[in-house]
Length: 390
Image (cartoon, rainbow, N blue to C red; front, top):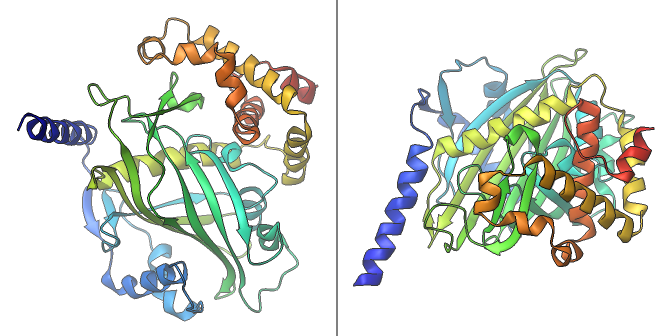
């Protein structure tokens, strides 16, 4: 009986914390037209396990029409529920061409964390049905797109710590990218469907402002919620349909539309509310836009060369630069209450923790630190970054 009461007390505490995070918001929830649902079902089926269905452009025309239409910004839009998961729709515009977005964001030689530092720790393309670097097929500007270019594969993703709980997750997902033309304009559809339950949520920490992009990853199971550090939380299911559509054939303006479903929580209870996903997408948009629209962002081929240089460095040199980064954090956030309270300060000076880090994890840190130098943000002064900036 005592354990049962403790179980329900913990559930209520989690629900109250999540509810508190959305208080004070005045966005009215509004379901998108049901005429869009068959098109969404078609796209979801394309990335379902064992899917054999072929892509049919005419089946998603209602979706494209909806995306193009102007909408009041006082609503929080959402599609029909799927996968027993919480649904949401979100859109934003980028003052770039679709070709630019593809060459930066769908480029295996540019780490995803460098362009989405507030959302992704790392994203690793695992395999494809085509050649090893198949996402490069999307970046060929000479394509006339008489027929869609389709890339299939799987990806291992690790996200940054959640703003509310501090938990971060790693999971595998099925990926499909479709580049085609619709009424004379280029259209990119990026599909992602989670495979199985994620790894158990681990304790992470956002140091200072989330805008600083300084995150720590303990590798230890749990959350940073008061009294709930022991909780085994998971992302149970997720599906993302992201559509990039050129709003004009000759102007650098692309609308980015996101349909997302997410089920996450503890003991198979979905704790996710629509506004949690909304906040995460705002978080994603802000850093993504800040980087891609920055006038000093190097061209993709230059970033490719820089990050390729990182990957060719001996692991000892990457480890030394990562240690410099930890030293920088230790000095910058000395006396930070959250750092001391969560005992993350010990990790910053723990060589055994540093020795356990993978090359991907260290390269993710250094790639974000490099982007900070481009944007003029405060950053660490590692030997590797100092040499590049000269």
